[in-house]
Image (tube, rainbow, N blue to C red):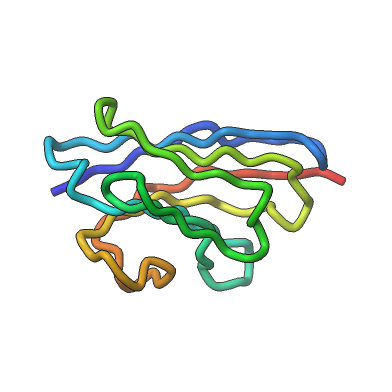
Length: 124
């Protein structure tokens, strides 16, 4: 069982930056690939970024590539999402997720555990 708690969301102006954190409970954090997803009002949950269990592989949605960076610290049981050059269309609730799968990391259905989400609002 893994419990995930996100933090770091907030209100920021367009062009600004935020860093989201996701703290995981459990001693097997390093066994899980981790993902970030987001959901805006009236829209489906969409993939943002994912990172392999070792941190050696990262994956990004085209909409955030070059602006967002996912990383993890297995010693701290924490995964991060650094978000730069934020745009109003990045406004959403951001969710952290964990999976034992090594493929299909862009699909919500592949993830076993989810956090409660943190709101990110980007004003124009």
